[in-house]
Amino acid sequence: MTEPQLYDLVVVANRLPVDRQTAADGSIVWARSPGGLVTALEPVMAAAEGAWVGWVGAPDTAPEPFDVDGIRLVPVPLSAAEIELYYEGFSNDTLWPLYHDVIAEPSFHREWWDAYTTVNQRFADAAARIAAPSATVWVHDYQLQLVPRMLREARPDLTIGYFHHIPFPPYGIYAQLPWRRQVVEGLLGADVIGFQRVADAGNFSRAVRRLLGFAAKSPEIRVPDGAGSHRSVVAKAFPISIDVEGYEQLAERPEVQERARQIRAGLGDPDTVFLGVDRLDYTKGIRHRLKAFGELLDEGTLRVGDAVLVQVASPSRERVAAYMQLRDEIELTVGRLNGTHATISHSAIAYLHHGYPREEMVALYLAADVMLVTALRDGMNLVAKEYVACRLRNDGVLVLSEFAGAADELKNALLINPHDIEGLKEAMVTAARMPRREQTTRMRALRRRVHDNDVAHWSTTFLDTLRHASHQSSAR
Ligand code: GDG
Image 1 (cartoon, rainbow, N blue to C red):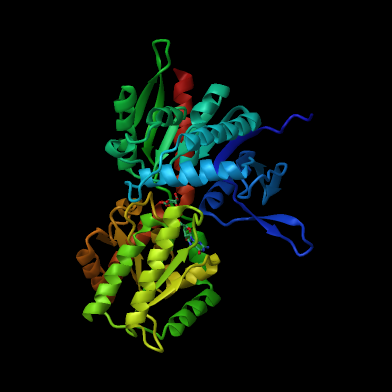
Image 2 (image 1 turned 90 degrees about the horizontal axis):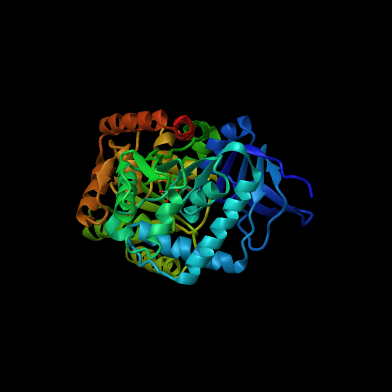
């Protein structure tokens, strides 16, 4: 057997940044899926002999490692049963609702936990096999919280980072998790644990103090090593961002701008185009947004023809019961609203249950006067940042939930509490009627913030902190 090639930087994430496609001749090809993470990591990966460990997104398929656009991809197989138990079950039906303030009820099943442990071990083993001596391994997200500790046990020479893309809940909620101690111990295997918000890092440190009694004074957590000394773990906020330049370049393209004009014309050139773009997920507050919009129409504050809501709800987790139910509820509401308010020539809501190419998303951002981000809880929310990045003319208004991580940075948005339907309605009306001067003042400030922290800045800051943390611990 040939020895596997070794890498100095290994990214471990649930999904590889590729999608399986069938070529014209019937053969399987892997096309890079356009994601912010891969855009951010590509230059670092290329410079550092990088590899990416993850699942290809289909059951029982794990091709040999292969290269896509200069990145080495190392597939980890998942069986159909593991997809059901580890991914749809424990990740998306236990952790996701629990970590998002129990907006939906989390399900706790021991067999889901067992599968989560088994699969995490498989990811850790795959990373341990290909990491060069003293390499850096960067683990991503809630599907893989046990990997940092598993990796440290197998490979104490490694420097291990972990980034948590979703919220970390307050202890009163987290404490419901039957495996709360194992998960915290799993994460503490990392040298640096990154969160979206300062509050998430605080919630994690409190969970560590409560469950394990370790000294945790922001940002340092002292993990006893059993020999009277300790290892330092940094737990701190690194708010993720987007490829700002990439979005700006798309927004500058004449054909994308033309498409934005077409979209507006197709909607009947209303005064105000409201836009929502979300995965169809109960955390995103789509129902609250529809309720507010519907009431504004009922009351006559907004009128069909003058205003329209475009809601892109891209298909997501369609085999999880809570998502099926949510889709039914949303589609019933949209149908009722359109039935009540639409005219032969104008809809109240253009509801689109599709995924679109990025160019089309940018055209939508350009076509929208008001972007509605009304999440009930969201780690960051990249859509808010994408909208801002695309508004090259410094116009348009962002209505943003204070429960999205982006609210910590984007303070010049109209910040709202999505549970307060009256407040949300007021903000929507204020946004629709906002004078151009105020739009410009706000949008300029928002654009500056997004420019100051783009995704390259995010990944560089994280990796620099990781490098520093590992030097400190090796110097002790
Ligand atoms: C998790 C956290 C955190 C959506 N529909 C289409 C499409 N999208 C793109 C958006 C955006 C991305 O998907 C969604 O990112 P969000 O941040 O809004 O939300 P999650 O998917 O829940 O992501 C979140 C994020 O991780 C990163 O850490 O911000 O809080 O929940 O980029 O534009 N893209 C295309 N077609 C679509 O139809 N091309």
